[in-house]
Length: 417
Image 1 (tube, helix red, strand yellow):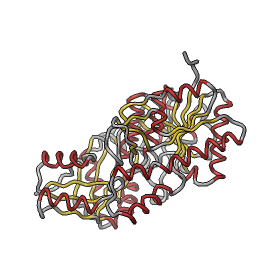
Image 2 (cartoon, helix red, strand yellow):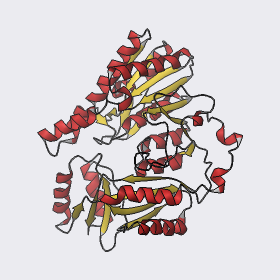
Image 3 (tube, rainbow, N blue to C red):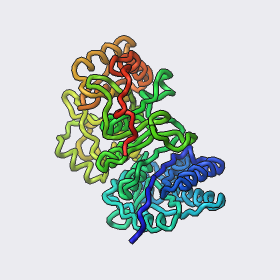
Image 4 (cartoon, rainbow, N blue to C red):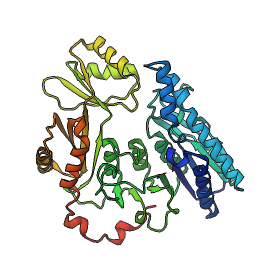
């Protein structure tokens, strides 16, 4: 029987391992956690822009690359990172071993490019932790039930980290990047955006789905199911202290935000809008046959409207041809739109009216709207996405409400376990 050890999982994004100097810094940070007595699992993304560069090469070879071959290609980036980081830890005097997703026991469904983890069998990881090794895991990838290499879609390294943390019953999972937490909006778009100290799983998942880039929606889904706390932090920050919300964002089951109060604004510009006369049943069969996620409906008008993210699509031309072949020339794809969302509980009709007014004041005319349980979503012209984000942030976030200004209780700031 393996000895019990307190485990933490650290995940580092591409910018955090973009070059050798940064890899060495990450190695030192992992070793620091090991010296504190933790069993340490480090999940890494591909270095810098490696994934984008590999995808660009694939597009030069084939405008509509086969999804299986894309997985074989794109999974190479994380393998490079994991091996180099393991070498860096060893060079600094530590003990480390690297594993691919399949070696780590990440089992997925059979969908390529955006596979879902269905099980984690971390036996090899546990065995090496028991020997005192730092285990470095390639994020973003796994092996399907048919023994094929699969990748998990954009942000999939987050999912790898949280799924591994859940399987190992880790104390927490750090998601480290060049941003010190989750902000009320993208600070590059909204200069007045501010870091959020605490978020519930549900709020964070909605922010991620809406386009916020710090955390991956599927990763949050895993954390919620297992009760694992996520600490979103800057790679340059120290290891989490007694209150990890002081210099990062803590994501847990607690929800300190009052109903009717917005917590953030996010946008997604990399989308394609599909208008078709096809039925819902026929569309479901179409997505299933293609082996991709059903995008869901967006309230349209006379036709059926869907808004697809382009991040995991990679073969838009083929998609357009397949849609027209299946449903006729009445199907239309357009790329000049964006989704802008306000996330919060019970925003309702009053929230929509406020948002409509804020957008109207800057001359933005939405072409669609949908209300989710934790999100209000406007479909706007793509060129207006940044202005719309700033306007909605000014309307919903910048006036601090009494509930936000009130001091938090000790229960709210206590670090979750």
